[in-house]
Length: 554
Image 1: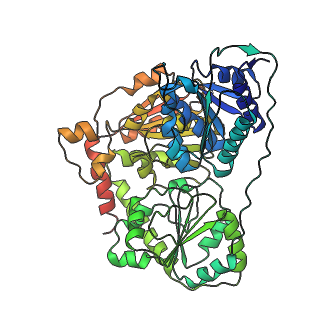
Image 2: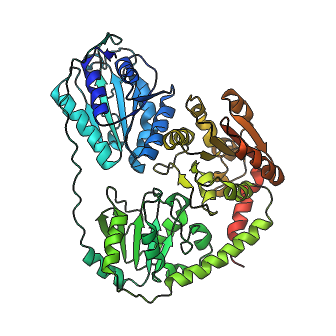
Image 3: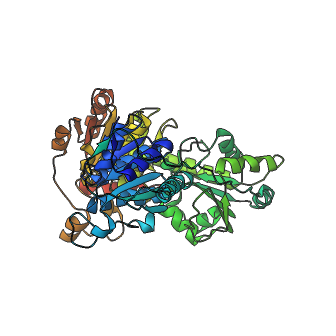
C-alpha cells in the first residue's frame, strides 16, 4: 500500500474513505497526482479514468443518481475545473450529492502568470451547497471543513467543492500515513413534526384537490398512498414519465388532456388546493394553466427545496411526502368526500385516449411514430434514461410499463451530459439501461462514448431528424437560412462512424416496417453496447405533432 507524500491529499482520501465515498471519477492531470495516486492505490475505492472533465462529472452524477449517495470527481488545476460546472448545476437543481475535488496551485502562484492557473476558490458559488477552500498544510481546520462539506452533500443532497492547493513535488509516495484525521460523526438534522391536524382540516374543506408529481424516484410513494389518492373522488393526480408513479386513475399524459381545453374546461379543472411533490415539472402547458388559473392554496411537500413555480405557494411542508401522507390518512380515516372532480377528468381522459389511438393509426413515419413503436417494447425491469428537448416531450405522450424506472436531467433541462449521465447510471444501477436521445444532444455529448466502463447491456436509441427538431414546434419557427443554420442546426453526419469507433453494435431504421424488424435484433444483442439510429423526416415531424394536438377533440 502506498500513499501520496503530501499530507493534505492523505487527509482528503482518508476522510472520503471514512464517509464511505467509494466511487471516484478521475480525469488525468498532473496537479491532482497526489489524489490520483492515493485513491487508485487503495482497493477500497472504485476508480474510473475519464479524460473529458465535463463527461466525467456527468458520469459521476449518473452513478450518484442511482446509489443515492455522493460520488467524487477529481481534476487538475485550471480550466479543467470549469468543465465540471454543467454537471454541478444539474446536481444542484436535481438534488444529487456530488463531491467535487479540485487540485490547485498554492495561493502565492495565483494571478502571477503561472501556467494552468485560475481563481478556483468559490468558483461555483452560485450553484454549490458548500465550498471548502483548504490551506496547503494538513490541519484540524482542513479536516473539519472537508467533513462538514461531505456531511452537507449527504444531508442536503447536492454538490460540494473541496479546493486543495498542492505544491511540487507531486508524485512522491510514502508507505505509511503521516496524518490521523479526527473523524466527526455525522448527525442528521431532526425534522420538526408537522401539524397534521391543521392540514387534515384544510384537506377536508377543499372540494377539488389537484396533485402534481414532478421528477420522483421510483417507489418513493407506496401503493397504499397512491390508492389513497385514487380512492378520493375530490382528488385528481397528474403525473409525468419522470414521476415514476403509476395508477389507472391517474393522468399520465398532461398535455394530451389539457391542450384542447376551453376557458370553461380550465375553470372546471382549477383546483381549490394544489399539492406538488417531487422535482421539476416538464409540461409547459400545466405551468401556464396553474399560473393563469391559480388555486386558492398550494402546498409543496419536500425535505429540502420549495420552489414557487406557479407563483401561489402558500405552505412549505418540510416532510418526506410518503410519511406526511401516511399521517394524513390516519387523520382522515372517516373522511368520505362527495365530488365529481376526479370522474370528470377520468371521462375526459378516456375520450382523449381514444382520439390518441385513432390518430396514431394513420400517421406517417415520424418522431411520434418511432416513440409509438419503441415504448411498448422497452424491456421490463430496465432503466430508461431520456435526453432533454424533444425526446423527453414525446415521451410524455405514451404510457410506460410500471417496472421501468425513468430518469432525465431536468434540473437544468440542458442537452449537455445526458449520454454521460445515462452511462454513469447504467454503471451505478447495474440493470439493463436504454437511453433515448435526439441527434443534436447525442452529438454534443459524443465524448461520453470515450469511456471504458460502458456495460454490454447498455443501449442507445437515437432519433435522428438531422437537427434541433424541437425548434420547429416552438412559436417563432420560420423556414429560412437563419432558422436552419442557427436554431435547428441542420447536419448530415454519419452516426455509424461514431458507433464503429467506440465499438457499438450499430442498427438503423428509416421507416416503420424496418424499425419493427430491427428492434427484435437490437433488443436481443447482449455481448456489446448497441446503438439504433432511427432516421425520421425533418419536414414532417412538427406537422404530425401539431395535427396530434389539433385532433384530440372532434
